[in-house]
Length: 263
Image (spheres, rainbow, N blue to C red):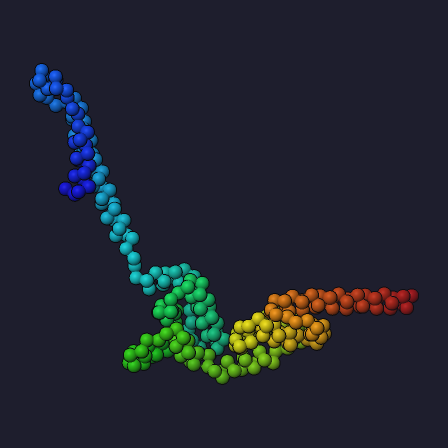
């Protein structure tokens, strides 16, 4: 019997029914009227204690930690990470890495699990590429970090020559007359990820965005000094709305004058 059960039994024995000394001398010894009930209670308590101990053991077993890799994998899968099958679509490769890293950042994954979680998302040509890459890495006794994995992945599916083309597109980007400020901003952020040196600091990003605005808007912003991208974007949107309203008023005024002349 366990120590817990012995303590319970001892407690109940201390609470057993006592008879007076007169009863003990004048009457023959016999069990108290409630002795049978007490014994039944003890048997019930022992059974309850045994059940509680069993439940405690089961709870301890169920709370044992599982492999941290399995835990990360389940969390990762719940976000429905994208698959990548390889191919010649360079932007698809860049987008896959970007989406995967956004999930890693959201879940605050450790560096040592990132490669292990990304590999099961590879399919088709990309899966064959990884099998060959893994064999070469293991032969050299290496263990790829996430940064090293990205470098080898980009060399295969998003080469430096393509990245340079995208960088040049960003550097040459200008808002055309037929492009709204929001359309220009969308293209600016889309291509800007290929030139992080211009996007990481707010002042640099704001200046680059301002320089690409069309002249009618940029010339009116030249007297202001912007320290954040959001500030220059909001100001450019307001100026664009004012210019459109001014152009509409002029157009309406001209139509009114033409109508009067025709009368």
